[in-house]
Image (cartoon, rainbow, N blue to C red; front, side):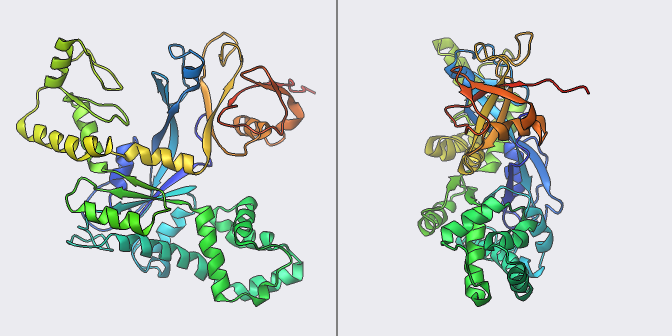
Length: 436
């Protein structure tokens, strides 16, 4: 019961920006990668991990923590989240160019977008190999294409929308929610959008022109599809100036610097037994370095610790590549950055972990006394006790069986009480099913 069904991270961008490589670097996926346009045609799904301090750390249960899904390593919880890599987008997608229609259709399922950007400047707007391209343009035209897709769909029906709104005497929120429902939009999202624009009933939408509807679509995009700029290929020498230019142009936009290719390489070297390396580690350890640490009595600094199987010695080519990764990424940025993008996406949406237990004294999850902090859910800010109960039971009318709930301090909680990052351990008491 850990994966938040409504939380889906979408990776977007032009072909060859590194979307599939990013998905492969953060998940168990094996998305197709290649230096040609539209490598991704059908969407690829993978499972990445949101990393957070586990409740077992604060309650001295690190050695007993037994997650049902994901894992817990030394008090660090790795909670599964679903990631989607959609078809590459090119200018003109809103008019059907490239795989635009397919991309935009896949996009509507995402909760938050990671715009994967090739900061090296070695691929143009169509994903073709080049040199000296300005990736700042990718940010601008991608925003414009998504806006045009939604705006055009709405504006071509605007006359009919206005007539129905007036005839049915609808609220502006209800009218727009119906029109935007195809993008996975709930009423509360539309209300937030309208509040931000200070638009409240009564409104005369028959007086709205293209400029006003366009303004509404821009705000809708900001609320419904929050976007994080993931500046990829930062270990390429030509990237520095492009990174600075993008950050200057978008100072208020969340940004993550990363190298998906380097993360994939490090994972490969670890799997083949050449290095010690853990998720989100800020360094790695080679055979020579491990031997030196063992001789000095310091042990391994990797989050996954020293294994029993000795590491293999490196050849010159791999040693040089690892040294470059260490210099360009580990020392400069504290890691490859790919997992930071996942964490930022989850937290940007306001999601946080909640633990459902059977006993608030020992935090076990079954009657036999096992499964300490076994069950964890990612929930958004504003989630109530009843919301969580509906989610974990998959039952909409569960309120009739609710008897009580209590938190880790033994304080009783009502159905309408909100859960928070600090108040995120819950025990439920429910009435038995009526067998009649």
